[in-house]
Image (cartoon, rainbow, N blue to C red; front, side, top):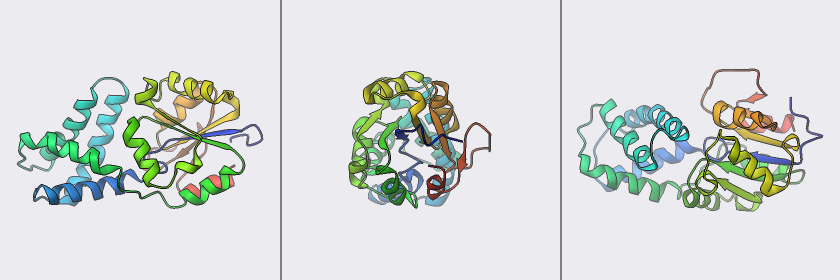
Length: 230
């Protein structure tokens, strides 16, 4: 259990933790497919895309694929998974439109603002995200989160992705706080929880997409549960 008497700084992940990626992504694809007149079963597409996207993000975190491969291959793989006869020449356009529109949607997980309001008076709040610099800052701005966070550390700007210890160490150095006085809250056991704990940070796992239960740190299913821990 985190020692709240030690904690002075809390670092949040953004996607799948505060910003409801699946909901906003679904709205983005709905808009794009309507604009590009791509007639497919959206629910079937989204069901396949969720797992495929997680897989390719894992490969990207591990530096096994490029940013371009991430953006393109997750779409190609999803179209193939649902046996949709897609035009390969449209992949670039779909990918560009997706990045353009994704951050314009602003749905947060239930309880996000209430949690942040409660924590803001007691701790210094920051974000550490593997997302891309401009896109993540747009998400934060458009979702009304800017005023809550003193710093936003993106993998693109730092040059290293979670769970690499360098991105956590960079954030701690920049905020001038010790690891034992810091807490990481995120949805990924691998990237957020174990990455942070490896350098001595405390952690809470927000289990937003049904990862297996573990004993590394507290796990919560809803954001409001974090208030009972801190």
